[in-house]
Length: 205
Ligand SMILES: [Fe+2]
Image (cartoon, rainbow, N blue to C red; front, side, top):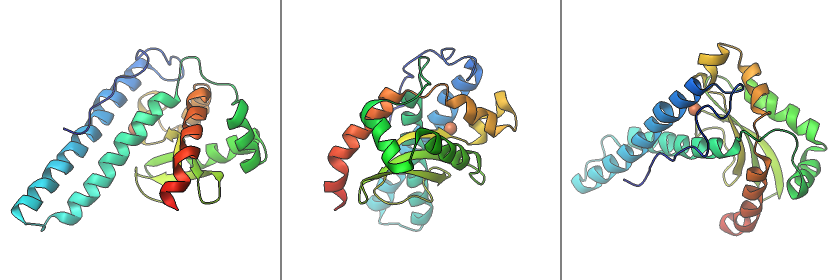
């Protein structure tokens, strides 16, 4: 199977009180686990379809592949974007890039907060590098795979599906997003920016 559920880089209780252990355990083991299983199943079903030369279910399988692989990718990033020692503000190259692209950290923070809180239905708010312009952008992702600018590389993602917060925050998505800012692992985000800057333009030119 090409996909495996990664372990969290911390204990389920490590993000308390902002993210309760019960919420985090269900989110990781059940929800993320389901996307891993779904992504593996999509690959297997597509291989079967090719071998049988039967593409009658192709549209649904392609959608399943996009949905589940994207869900797996975003959750894997989300866990590493958070840390028990997170919060505060970015420094160094990431802070400079945020200032260049958004004017100030406060302006960026307001933009990403609003994007995450107002996602219609299920989705994500994301900070991404858009390599053609060489700028950071905020994206509002629908489900896991829609409303994206091709080629933009996500660096920091906020999961705002109800499964991410409902157990602890009920319907108060804005409170959950506010709590996430206390957990952001800026060193992880900065390392992703450095990697993305190195590869993105060549790949998408
Ligand atoms: Fe999630």
